[in-house]
Image (cartoon, rainbow, N blue to C red; front, top):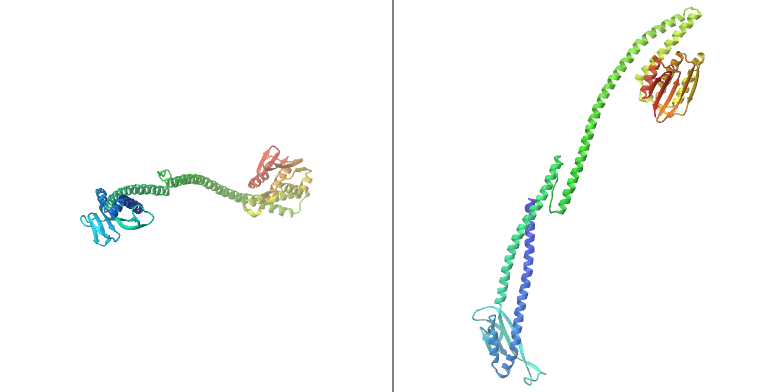
Length: 445
């Protein structure tokens, strides 16, 4: 439909242009032919003027001979001389006045052809032929020229115009058909290319020839398709990576769930296996302490009671890892935690005559549950006390992107207390290492 409209519009416009162009040339041709006829008539009148003067003055018939010479031209139909009263005195050719006293009304008699009448007044001196101071109109000279050459030239030119109109109309038809077909083919190529892109086929390039604007448009569409393909490939690659990471995350989550389930089962097992016996031991210890006992027996029972209490606290520390929430985390300073734990255990350390040296530099804050870190350090110090240490050195500070606390003579052998301390530190994302009698704890900042 678009191609048909374009073709009709182009052909109609081209035809209008040719028609106007032909009219302009026809008008110019008519003007040129008319000018030639006028020049021819004026030339004949000028050639007959002097003989016509002699004819009016003397009656000399030499004008007839001159007129016949001009009459040999087939375009000259007649020559006439009129007196001052407008009566014909000499007629040569096929025309006569319609009215004898009206020389302006002439027509063809023999061939009945139309033409152009050219008139010129004949003036003579008042005093004679050679006195030119005063002149008067003594007659009129007329020549009637056929318009056959004019009409023939017009018909010939009109034929040529028609021929060229038909020729150029046919040429315009062919050109408009070619241009419209070429343009519509380019537009069809653009539409097909866009449809291919819409279907996700970005490999096919749009090729346009001969139309700079459409070529630039095709290049822009090709560049857009290439850029779109790169983006889609990148998105697909990212989706593949995302699926792979999602699968890994699902696997990790599954392992975490299994781990959490195992941890929960472990906590329940600890709760059952430790709490029940400790409650029994603690209950019997309390009952025995109410009895009358010797001093030595009472001291031993007190030691048992305190050990039971300590074990109960350690078990509670382990169980608290299961029940903590994000609200329990706070910004804490490890240096202050260490000082607080050492100060709280000063009495126990003093009784055992254990010297504690603390040299901890400024440490950045970390997010942790303060109570759990306190239990971890308490477990380490209790392990050192149980191992019979005489001096405990606690030192550390910031090292690169980590806060590290080293505890020497902390009783490096694995025990329940150290296991619980390790669990607490690692639950906070920290590092817990045992190197001989030295314990190293580190947290990233």
